[in-house]
Length: 232
Image (cartoon, rainbow, N blue to C red; front, side, top):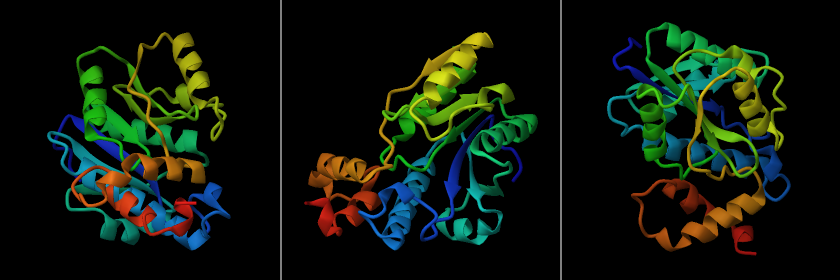
């Protein structure tokens, strides 16, 4: 897709295949149910960012053969491309290297594990970057990781030797940024849904909204409401 705006938002996503996504939900949820739930996460995320104004949108997917899956999930206006790299750090770094080289002034990458994340936080990341208030923007999660990372220039070192999938991801990243002399701004902390306990908390937080379909995370909540063990 040709560059149209100065800002690019990239969703990083996995193909929702049974047994390959949300494995920390096993055995509370079956692999099939976990994959269906993750598909709801994706649909909620895609719907929310589709209404961003003045922002190009893309989905960076894995595995490489998953393009048709995401073509059916994504609405018009999303660029689709496969992630490149042996591990998460390399894949994130390559997205920034490629997309910033295309002329974007700012690129923010967001995960697909926080179905209720509002687009206002994504807009805030671009505001902080484009007004020069930050070199790097990070959206911290309660588990010690981050749900968003945004940059104006690529900084590959920021993604090297990070203990991915641990509670130290954010702290190690912040220490690296400090040593590199980068100005980092943090967005509001947000919860990503990795464990069954996260799902129960999400359901209890939003269950009164079940009759309303027009809010961030509604597809995920509707699906959770059908699972009997969410109430136990």
